[in-house]
View 1 (cartoon, rainbow over the protein chains, first blue to last red):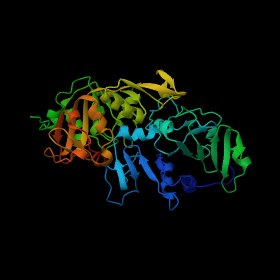
View 2: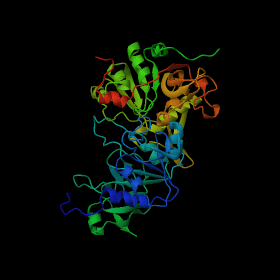
View 3: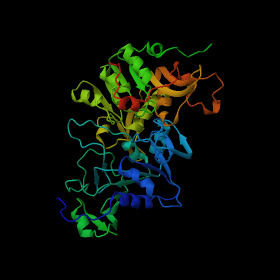
View 4: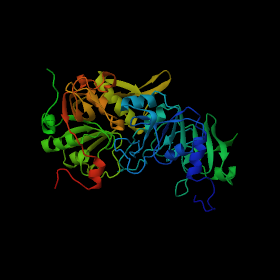
Length: 218
Length: 238
C-alpha cells in the first residue's frame, strides 16, 4: 500500500523530540543505535538524565570535538563519545546487571516491526543466509522498566511496521510500552493500541489506513 | 616470589594449543588485545573456539586470526561490524561456525564460568529463536531460559596498568569484557600499557585482583585497530 499523498507528519528530529519530552527528570536511559541516539539532543532544559551505554559507561556525554576522539571511549554503536563529570565505567556483567536487573528506567530502540501486543522485532529479518547479529537488544527488552520504540510508521515500500503480529523473528514478546512514529504516538495497553497524539495534518482514519492493527482512541 | 610478568607476547601465548577455547576481550576495537592476537597468529594454534563480542574489522587483530583459518567457531553477540568482511565471507562459505548469544547472556555466561556457577536462568531471548531447544522454567509466573556457563582454556585481555601480582586497571570503555574474561579461563594472559611496582596501584581501585591473572606482558604503545584498518594494514604483513 504505497503512500502517494504528500508527505505529512513529523521528521526524525521532531520524533526524537517527542520521545525526549516523555523522559522524566532523574531517569537512567539507554538509547539504541540510529534514530534513538537523536533523543538525547532534545531533553527539555531543567531535566537531568543519565545515559547508559551497554559497553560500560553510565554518564555518556556529547560527541567529542574534532581531534579529541579516544578510541577507548566509545558507545554501543562504536562511535567516539565523551563521559560527563560524575560518569563511571564498569565491566560487561555489571552493565547487564543494570539492564537485566531492571535498574535502567527507559530504553529507546528502533524497530523493524511491532505488534499490537507490544512484541518487538528489530534484530533479524529471518532471511536465509543473512548473518544474524543481536547485540544487547534481547537483554534490554527483557530487563529495562519501560521500552520506547522510535520508528517510521511504514517501510520504504509503504507497508505498515505496526501489525497484529510480527512476521520477523522476535526480539522480545509483549515488551514495548510506547511507539513514536512520524505519524503518531501510540501506547501499547492490555486493551490494544491507543493513539496518544497525532502528528499535524494526520487524521485518525489516515493513521488507521497506514497501520496493520486496530487502533483505539482514548 | 610471585612474578607473572613475561618478556614477550610470543612467550605469553606459547602454551595455547590446537582446539583451545579462547576468550578475547574487547568491544569493537576498544579493549581488543591486538598484539596478543598477532602473537597467536605467529604461534599458529588452530581449530580454536573464540569467544568475543564481535569478529574484528579489516585484516588485523581478531579479523586476521579468523582470516588465517585458526578459528573453527565464534561465540559472539554481534558478528557484523563496520569494515568487517573476513567473518562474513567465511560464514557464507560455511567455513566457520557461529553461536550467536545475546550480549548480556554472553557476559553472564562468562561471569558464571568464572564464578563456579554451571548454568543460570535468564529472561533474555525468551520467545525468540535464540531460546529454541533450550531448557526453560517458569519462576514466580515468568518464563526464563537456561544458559550454560562458558569456561575457557585461555583468555587474552588488554588492560591499562598492571603489577607483577597481576592486579589490573583498565582504560574507560576498553574495560568491557576484560574483568569477567580474566576470571573464566584456566590461563589468563594480559597485555598492559604499563607495569608498575606492587603498591603503586591503590588497592581501592584495583579492578581485576591478581588472583585471576596468569601472565602479564607489557605493550607500551598498542596499535589502534581503527588506525590500522584506515591504513588498510594486514597481519601478517605482506
